[in-house]
Image 1 (cartoon, rainbow, N blue to C red):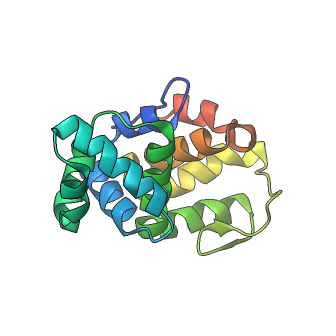
Image 2: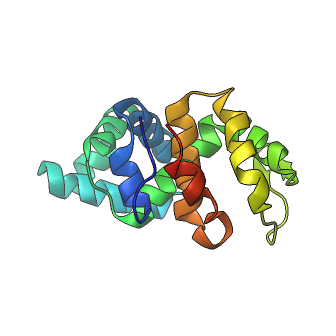
Image 3: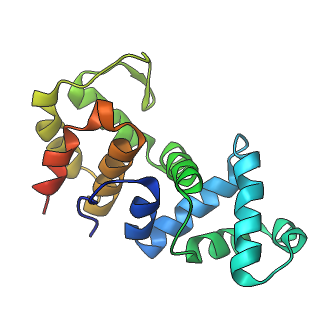
Length: 166
């Protein structure tokens, strides 16, 4: 199970993911139409790591590209961040929505509506418990760690919530 990641960064969160989570995140990354520049960077990284030509990687089918990306234990923060966002938007919207509902934050299917919306720190623990009761623990931990690494100023209160998770 994924616990709190010390000095949470996207690349450290990526390293802590289960094989299944990485595979699903990699698949979401390759199908994200807004990630074209990041996909080129990922193809170059895979080509370097696997000793392929970049053109070969780009030409692979979705499943093979996802498998290769998921097999990389380490990703640069920018790529890991894009993969984490793509994964949550593609597969975890019900959990995102439930968490934001529990916090009383306005959202559209899990996407926060207001740029300056900040969670009430006193509600973070109970909101986390709400989603822990409804969704797989490793998915909840991954989501909370993703929030923390994406915006530590807004979600820094999750550090205490993650350190008490078990």
